[in-house]
Image (cartoon, rainbow, N blue to C red; front, side, top):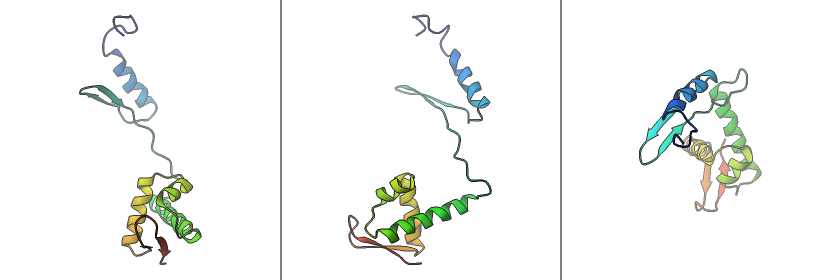
Length: 119
């Protein structure tokens, strides 16, 4: 791009990117030079509802998962993730914690089986 006249000299845009991110309240970007060149630009964290703590948000997610399981004891974790608009990883983590704490139980084979809500 330097040879075509798009940029004045190599590396001049990195400072602009850092400054723009700071102006927008984002973390400083990460630059990685390995086999390739990558820039990681961070997004803003999702805002929690006014007056809602992180624990309250997690409690609501657990309640939504339980309601989904009450409504369909054969529901899959990907279906729950899709229904709640959350990542599959977040649902798997929440369900694992709920199983460990005895709130829910999965009966039968991993693929298939059914959910039992215990509390």
